[in-house]
Length: 415
Image 1 (tube, rainbow, N blue to C red):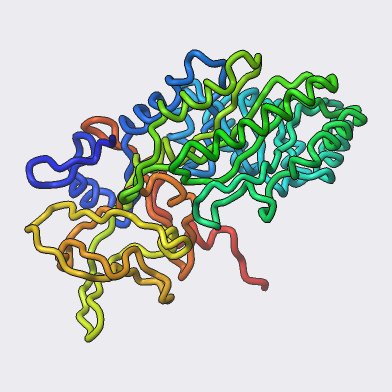
Image 2: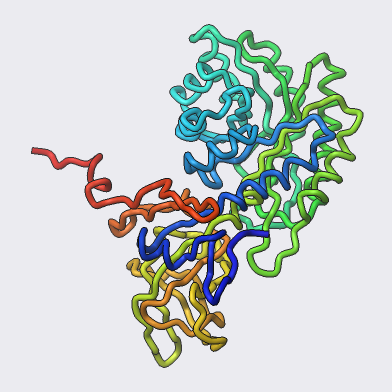
């Protein structure tokens, strides 16, 4: 459930009418519900209460400082994939000792920063990376806690662009090479093998791929322990899906039940990296209709937000529910909702029945809390929109709208 609801004939976020935010903060704008964020974090974390676990929110889903601070205050750890995300977590008062650093392309400066911060563990994705982290740890006089990210070759049955756990993907180390990889780590003096990690993909709507992966990883952990490794963490990554349209993903309680049943009596800490399932339905993109256009083959609704603000429909063919902020009637019309970007791929909706919008109407693009603002750009020299956090009857602009000067600040022409 989320707190975007119709009240008195218009759409609200918690106790604040979206039309008021549009009038005061402008559009396009991202709007997040604090109550929904808190509710979703607890709904995910609490079913694991009887199992030794750490919930590490996946920063890439939504990295706004206010949201990171909210989760840090609720006891969350963090899954990061860059030095910039580590910087954000530390600025938001997140605990470095509850940070897992994933990603295939960690640079020397990023590795050094993570070593100095004292993160929980590096999730290592190649043998060259393993050796580089050992060298960097030696150079700064530290020992790096690490896990190997294992590619279990499990099909997550999701969009091919967000599949990460099959042999054809760039992520992780093939499970057949895992034991040799850990034995190689044991020969290095400045890394400490403490865990096994994997992440098979995003927006999964069935628990069976998670269970298949977990069974393979448990068997690997047993082999490693028999070989003398003190494996303390089993990191299953994230990937639990949400409802955008008619998907029926398992709820977090069902997800927890099947995982906890598999790890009972294993004496291991389960690490979980939820992202979309916590923030996806906690946010929307609010835009306004500029024009409508009737053509022989199409009806277009042209809005003031574009693919630079929300690229998911263009990139993945992603579905987002469309709602009128102030519904005028039940009339619908088949149309495309498009933006001002100079690309034919600049659309939010194609050939779908939507409310019969007119110029000036406000449009809520739902389920835009995850992988939305974090993927925004300045394409066509468009300033990125603000982010607004609603808390009950009040709201705060937690990232102001960019200006033209903000865009140009890093640039300079040669004399």
